[in-house]
Image (cartoon, rainbow, N blue to C red; front, side):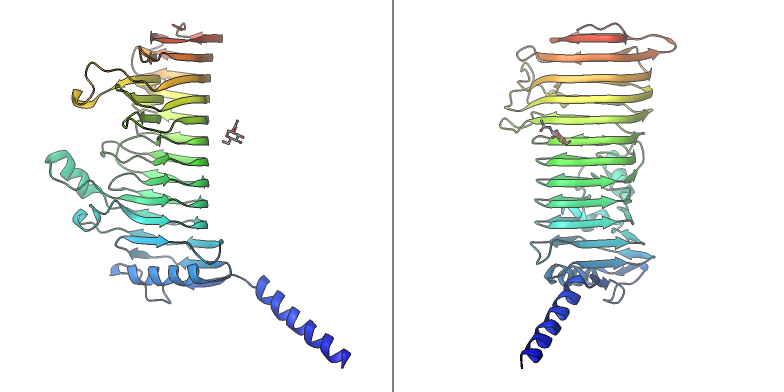
Length: 391
Ligand SMILES: *[C@@H]1O[C@H](CO)[C@@H](O)[C@H](O)[C@H]1NC(C)=O
């Protein structure tokens, strides 16, 4: 009897461990009805794959094979029953080319309230050209959809993903913790409106590595409430550079702190490394920022702080930014400026920039010394600094 009991217990343990260690269940979207023809609507198949993966007690994989899959807006919503969902994409996901279909829905592919999701590979084709043409020719167009948004989610990995021609921002990280992105490629026309590459806000512990971003707006934009952000080995251009801000749009706003931007190349961009705030009162701030090892190739404003942002002079004339900018280091920034003023610190008169540090900065304009311009900015310089520091 004792013998039989232990055999039974052993058998039960074996079954338990075998299922716990089993390969994650895989849901192939084609088996669930998706069509790789680029025009049949595969939205329901993707939603059903998501529901199965999200309801699974064990790790689960959603597989998207090669081919082109047309999707309307998809919300991949949690919370899920496991925290290890992998979406492995060999194919291309295609948005509706008629911008009216998703142009007012805010986003195209949304992940919300999820924990532990990895997206690996794939191309996201936002089909934004029609909306860009509308925006540049007449008014009355929808705002447009973000291609890929993570909202109120944790422990997200995005690797080797390409985002093309988004209607609006390509990738948004909002209200998230612990997000890693690597090998991301963003491509959109240099004149496409509001097509920021990656936008991060209200999030902490986000890393963006080994990525290549060419677009019509900021390559990376960093909004209020961003802390512990690490950006390394990113090539930007065309585009508006890497920008902290615009900050101070709202009166009550969380600050930005501990941002590292390391080993970047900017080619033909409007800005290199920028901090920007609206010229009006706000509770926000930007501090403990490090810009290290940047190469500028023909960049209009390689180093810029602009605290007097006030588009169309609406809602701010005569006012002053109260976003306090402090402890910002520029270390080993070199290359060419496309304008004479290569370093510009235009800070708030009421809350001047403090502890700005320039270390080994060498920027030239047409093979000559460029210029630096300071307004309400204090700090130090060390090493070779050209143009001569105005701090
Ligand atoms: C700053 O952020 C990095 C990650 O980007 C993190 O490793 C580090 O601990 C943070 N420093 C502080 C003082 O919070």
